[in-house]
Length: 474
Ligand SMILES: Nc1nc2c(ncn2[C@@H]2O[C@H](COP(=O)(O)OP(=O)(O)OP(=O)(O)O)[C@@H](O)[C@H]2O)c(=O)[nH]1
Ligand SMILES: [Mg+2]
Image 1 (cartoon, rainbow, N blue to C red):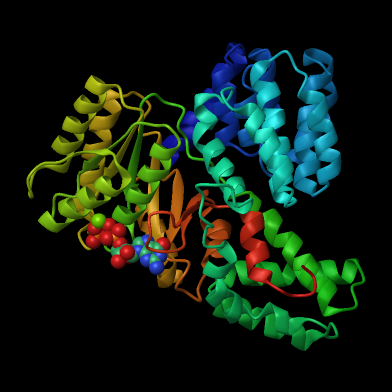
Image 2 (cartoon, rainbow, N blue to C red):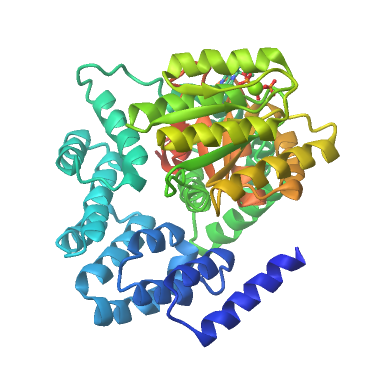
């Protein structure tokens, strides 16, 4: 804890002495929300615009935007209109002004910087997806084929597949819709029942009850209700439907902060997967391996859950299904040794991604902590700065318990992202909101079934729309 603060302040000191270190400015922005706007601006400037993609990634929430805005004219002055248009476009997008965003990205698209030009087109494609204009999205994505930087390839192919499926193009079968998966949670929340009512105290009380029932959690629920009451008064709202509209807007804003892409910027990238027993680690790894493979990555799995022979066999079955390589050892082998072997194998063959399955016996925290640290040490020694991702898998069915699990793991190690599984079978899907609000860790994927294709990148828009279902505000 204290180490963290020391590091942060010394980083700032160091940058004061020698500001020409764009990567470090980025780091400072990631560490401190307060420093972020100025630090992002500096990262952009000192890299002469090269770090635009990373800056965009950090700058993904509206709250940060508000403070970043004053820098936009300076960006225009220093780097040109392409850059300022791009960031203005992002701001409009977050505010929901999609048409305005598109126009701005259109300007940025003409940049001499290939990355900025790619990103702008890519964001336009994503806007079309948001708006349900799949034909247009398809056209944009198709044009980008062959120009996608390695870092975006996975995200690109996920989106491309989504669009192809929506359009019913050949070779694609329709995804189980997210909305279908969230049915139980939507019913538990029952937001549609609030439609067409007068806005009074009893409505707020009922809404509060429903949110708690759907596992939104006490903290997040109270904060939401508090906000809704104040804002409803300020905006002089009269009907429940106006209030539902406000709730929807607020949830999208809140959850947009918890969106995060898988970090594949290392070559190879090592993904360490953690979580307690039975949450869906192995299944998630299988699904993820398949998606990565389909996107053109060469993937290897490391069977570092050596606690049970069955765990190794299960991962083998998933490796076969996904069509990827597995590195394993006998039951009882030191998990760190398996990881070491897997790394050697990946180095020898030049693979892109290594995903490490682990055992999740939280009942013995000491041992688990030792095991995780040992694995991390092996990875860090072979690939400095890695693992690129430490994904914590949580089971949505466990409701509030998932939060306690995450807190316990956070004490053991840093966690770069959450995978929330089994959203399909549960009425506790509101836990997404609690996780985002209480833990502030990006949710990178959600599981909506047991099949290999039932893993989706977490999309806050889609999630909120699915929660609201057919209420008249949607
Ligand atoms: N409905 C549903 N079931 C899932 C999902 N993800 C995993 N499961 C099921 O959850 C069960 C446990 O999954 P595993 O992948 O074995 O979990 P694990 O975390 O590896 O478990 P251990 O290795 O025992 O620690 C399996 O029956 C999976 O099919 C999901 O998104 N939806
Ligand atoms: Mg397992």
